[in-house]
Figure 1 (spheres, one colour):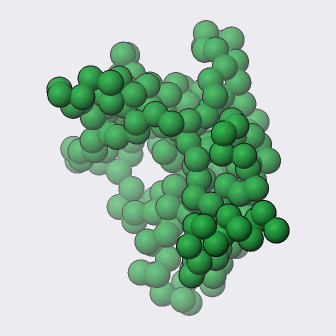
Figure 2 (cartoon, rainbow, N blue to C red):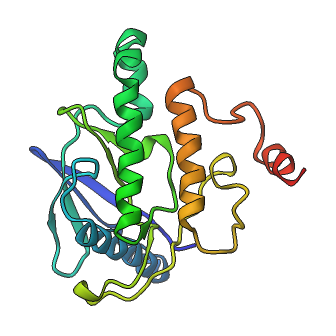
Length: 206
């Protein structure tokens, strides 16, 4: 796993996400830069899409990206604040957008590798947009002169099992995590939320 620490600042309607530099930890800083570069390259691969976070600017050296500010937070925190009536009314739309976003990144050769409900940002236009690609992997991208990169992320046990944690993520492992995120959207609880990670792992071994 690589370090994935970034600093985030807001300027008006723009959120800047940039590499976290630790002067006394050059190795960790290098890992953080790898993660920032990966996220910048994934946004280049994905381009503009109604179900992907709006990236308005990418540093030429890929040390930071700028995203459109999302005033409603993410889907994990947004739904409880809007109330049950609103949730029931629009849940079908959000489910569709979540599925559409994952289908889209897979069509572009990208594997997210850390799918969970709070990775979808809730924008004012009522679109749920997938974000946070700093641990993602992708296939060769000849048009962008990018070579294949394995993913560096790993979901929590309720979202990644039965994936082998020592292997690269796959379309199938992303879809398993998507199913867990959809479960949380509908129920407001993570799968096996009351169990420890060890207990969840034991259940998948059975």
